[in-house]
Length: 155
Image 1 (cartoon, rainbow, N blue to C red):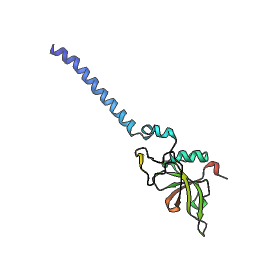
Image 2: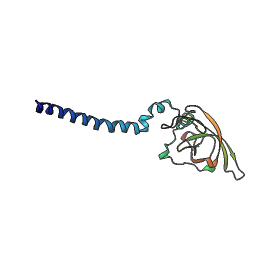
Image 3: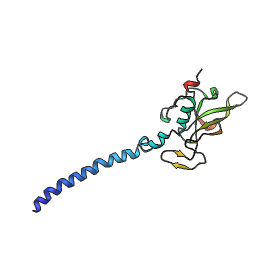
């Protein structure tokens, strides 16, 4: 009788171990994949890239694929800048103050999810208290690091 119990118990133990081994990586993969973990936030369209797309009709490249298509001195109203607040935060240029050389010194920009000085609702998904809320503020050229003209704004 002891042999029979061992024969039945062994497949059950092996099956349980296989189930744990298979489900653990899948769960870990899901939790570490931002697109999956943050899917509910992404669907709400409240990130800064969503704002730019709503305003300009063109979606800016994601942070890993960003390529400037204009120089800072070419900035005009309607262009997009990457802010140094956190990597990948983008904003639409609303107004520009230029120095005597014509180079932009300051600009008023607008965006969603501008979290400077705000609490985070979900830090892992980079969601601030201003998620989906349009804000406008002044930044210096030194607070920007990327310059992009949407297709809809190109002449």
